[in-house]
Amino acid sequence: MSNWYQELEKDLNWREAELASLKRQVITTTKGTVAHKVLLRAVWALLYAHYEGFCKFAWDLYLDELQKSGVKRKECKDEIARLSLQKQFKELKGDLTSENIWNFAQIYLQNLLEENIDFQVKLETESNLYPNVFIDNSRQVCLDCILVDQYKIELRTLVARRNYIAHGKEMVIKDIQEYQKYEKAALEVMHELAISIVECLDKKLYLKIP
Image 1: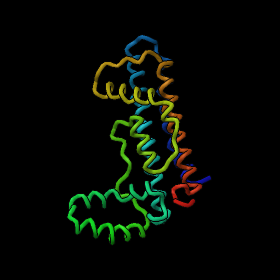
Image 2: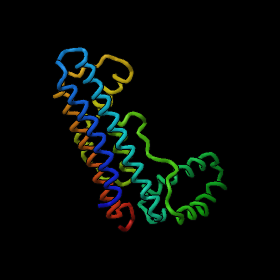
Image 3: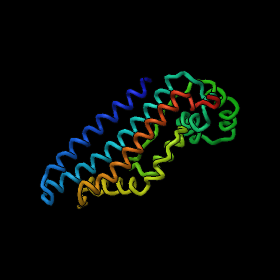
């Protein structure tokens, strides 16, 4: 069993344990009471926190493992190599003279491609991990995640309602059955992301020629 598999599994386990614990409190609290309504809002907010938190943890772990592998940028798929050069591209934008662009393309870029890959800029969730952000991040690092398309509506709703709760607005969650639909969507997407990362690292699918 790979080390990254164990790390991802461990992170998923503690998050799921917290959700299960809070759900038990919801279920054992009298329906319709203030306490019941508060707990439903709390478990919704916690679900989003673990959804975003795990995705960020998983993407960071993936990039850290790529960096530790010692692979050269030129050996990686173009999307991954481009992500590792975000800092350098930003610096280039600060001086777009013909001479600087020429030197970057002819000299500097070639040297960078010969170096071991590293990521000074990581993937961001923008504190609102809508499906389009998840999809864009996954594509940037060549991870094959398809369930996010299936659960677009649920994930959009998860983020939107979490924002209402976080901003102190009234957002009523009907009951635990309503919540379960969104938990299922988030957890399945999280598990698929973990599986995709393990497969990509195990099979070295981040390389141009695995």
